[in-house]
Length: 412
Ligand SMILES: Cc1cc2nc3c(=O)[nH]c(=O)nc-3n(C[C@H](O)[C@H](O)[C@H](O)COP(=O)(O)OP(=O)(O)OC[C@H]3O[C@@H](n4cnc5c(N)ncnc54)[C@H](O)[C@@H]3O)c2cc1C
Image 1 (cartoon, rainbow, N blue to C red):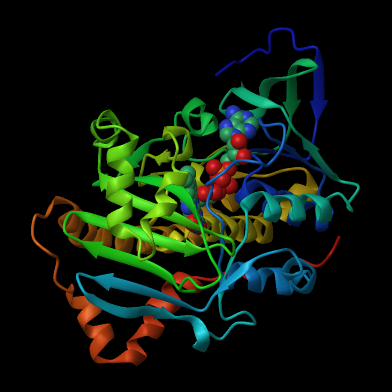
Image 2 (image 1 turned 180 degrees about the vertical axis):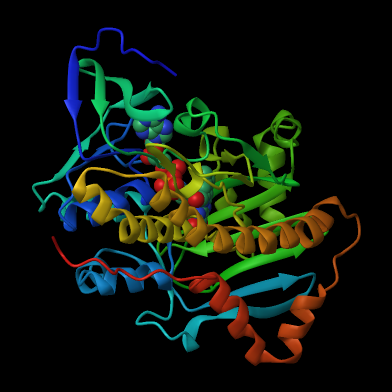
């Protein structure tokens, strides 16, 4: 981290500097600009187009869109609606979560490409004079004066830049440069698996339901994306190279045994370019802030893919941070107290969610992946099968989360 800035060819100031234009950064940027704060979001990519970034918009995020008066316009974007999540363990198939009873305006998960969600937020945020989005601007370092973080340094196509701000927010994801340069301590919770993502075409007579399948040594999930299936194959942690070494044809055979339709479609996996690896990480920061700096979203807590709640938590962090920080940011001074308040507000939902994810991934998925025998129904699913009303509990945990946030800011 630099005390002095070197010689950037652009020196700028902003009321709040957000590093990273993912769900956390874009939602926070939008909310702060809406509340009258001058805010700059720095995103290293040229656009939001990246495949397999996580495309689930949960009922609590849709509720935030409703509170912002944007829900109807948002739902005009192409999306699919998932009302129920089903699972197949061995030969037994059951509904794991039923969202139809949630106390929210939308009782479904919307599946939408993440770039459409981010483009939507970006276009709405541009309506506010105080919102500035700088694409192709990669942050490489923090600027510090004494104990206080006072800005960031980075580079863009126009050359090196330095952006000064009363607050830097690290929303730069699971490989956060901000948290690393700030020296924040990361607690690694471990994960027994990695995930291969791929897409296979979907035909009109295919089953419509989103399905998880658990069988001997296998965890496989298929999400209905309209004209294609988004498929996830969980594998033992670190076994990706071994699987790749056996060749794409052998991989196609594995997938062919798992999909419930004709095997011809696995030919669509022509090479490893059609199969993306997600290295699963579950971690969290011991402290999310330093004077002049706060981390939110994956930068503060990388989530397991279990339940697909990473985007939701990132958005909820952004809503809580905006509620707490808008007033001090408008005044131009942010002491550590409101930063601590953001962590206090969001730490419990993060810990509780990660605890549930770690239970599922270690006690259920890890055992299935390590197993050589057909898995039997784990006890939480036995409970769901015995008492269908219990399906409302996972639906609530996945769809709404532990502590849903509400927009409390008037438009500035
Ligand atoms: C393959 C895959 C599938 C997933 N599936 C799901 C799912 O189905 N549902 C779900 O809820 N979650 C899913 N997730 C997790 C989800 O994507 C994350 O939890 C969520 O995106 C976190 O949002 P974020 O804004 O905190 O971080 P990110 O989405 O990671 O956004 C960080 C942003 O910061 C930018 N950035 C990084 N470094 C810098 C830098 N130095 N300077 C400037 N910009 C920078 C990045 O380009 C990125 O745009 C998935 C993740 C992966 C990788």
